[in-house]
Length: 574
Image 1 (tube, rainbow, N blue to C red):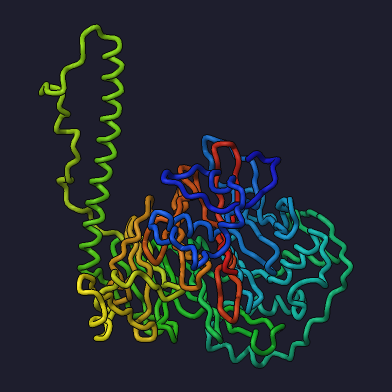
Image 2 (image 1 turned 90 degrees about the vertical axis):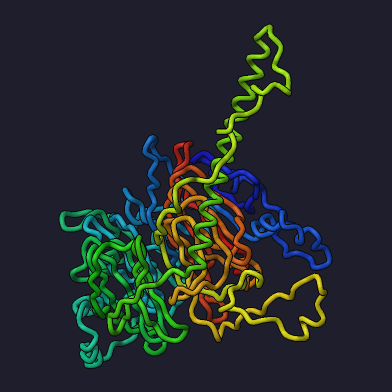
C-alpha cells in the first residue's frame, strides 16, 4: 500500500504459512464469512482444519494511518494511543508529538495538537483525565479529557455542542490549578477536599470557535481556542521521573494507578465522582510506595473477584504478589505439572526445529545432486548402493542439553472465566461426571469431566513463560493442561472477544510479529505480522450493558516499502 492509497478493511486470511505484513488486509470483505455459522450447515465447523478460518472471519483488520519511514532503521514512529469520545484517536508520535485522528471522517489524516513526545496514554473516563507518560524525563502528566476533546473538536471543525457527554465541559483554569496543588498528598488528607467551597457546575461554552496556532518563548508551538490555551490543562505527578510503565485499576469508589520506576513502584489513587457530582474533579493522592530489588518485566493489579488485593511484579526468575495493604511479598510457585508440560513442549520444539533443518538440507542436497547428474556423463548410483543412503546426521535427534531454566515474561489477570476443552481441565478445577452420564454413555467412550463453577474457583491468571502461556491461579495451581505456544516471545498480551460471548482470543505482540491464539483450544488462529518491527499502541474500551469490553486493539509497524502503518484489530461482537 502506498502512502497515497486510502485505508481499507478486510477479514483475516488464514494460510498455512505466516503471511506478509500486508496479506491480512488486502483480501476483500466477504459478507458471507462475517455471518455467524448456520447450525444446519455446520459440517465444515466440525473439521478441525477449518477452525482457524472460522475464527479469523470473526475479526476485522483495518489500516487507520500511514506515513513514510526510513530504512535500514525502521523504528515505528507511533508509540502510544487512546480513544476519546468514541470518535477521536490520539496518537503519540516520536517526532511530531500528540496527533489527533477523527475516525468518523474517511481519508482523514492525523493532525498534531500538542508538541510533546508521549510513550503511553491511559484514559480514565470516570475521572475525566488522561494519564500520559510524556516528555524527555518520562514524567507522568495528568491531562483534562474535556480540554483535549475541546481541542480535537476545534481542530476538525466539529460543533462542540454535538459531543457525546454534554454534561461535562472544560473546567476553569483556577479550578484545575487548585486540583494540581493538592496532587501528591497522603490519602488521609482527603478531609481537606471536603472543606473546599462548593463548586458550581460549569456553564456550557459557546459553540463558536476561534482557533489560532501560536508560538512564543515560554510555550512551544500551541493552539489558542477562544483565548484559552487548552494544552495547559495538565499537572505532573510529583517525584515521578524516568517512569517505565503505568497500570490502572478501577473500583466503584476509587481509581488506582501503579507507576513503575527503576527501583520502586508508587501506587496513586483518586476518588471517583461519576456517581454524584459528575462535574467535580478530584486530585490524585499518593497511596503507597513499594521498593523493589530490580526492575520488573511486568506489573499489574490483581483482585480476588471481590476486592483489590495484590500488586503483581514479574521478574525473569520469579513472579511476586505484593499485598497492597500490608506490603507482604508472596512468590507464585510453579506447579510440577506445568514444569512437565514446559519441558515436553520445549523438547518437541527443538525436535521440530531440527526436523525442519534436516528437510531443508536434504532438499538442497537433492537439487545439487540432480544438477550434477545432468552435467556428468556417468550414470547416477543405483538405489541399492550403500553410498546412496543419507548420512546419520540428516535424521533429527533429541537435544543432548537439558531444558533451560523457566523464565517469567508476564502474569495477567484474565478478564473472563475461561471455558477450555473439558478434557484439558485439571482435577483441581473439574468434577467427575455424574452417575447418569456414566451409565448412559457408550462403553468405548469415557465421559468428560464437569468444569468447576466460576463462583467456586479462585481468580485465574494468564502466565507467560518465554514462549509458552498457561492458565494458573496465584497459588501456582494449573487450571488446564492446554499449552498456548507462541512463535515468538510476546512483549505484550491482550484479549479480544469473538462473536460468541464465551469465545476469546489472546493477541500476543512480539518485536516483529502479532499472533492470535484461541483461548478455548490453544491453537494458532493467525499470525498477522511477520518479520517487521511492531509496537503495541493501546486498546479501545467500551461499556456494554454495564460491562467493560475491549472493542479494538491498535499497533504500529514499519514495512519494507518505507511506510509506517497504524492497524486496528476489531471483533464483531460490539
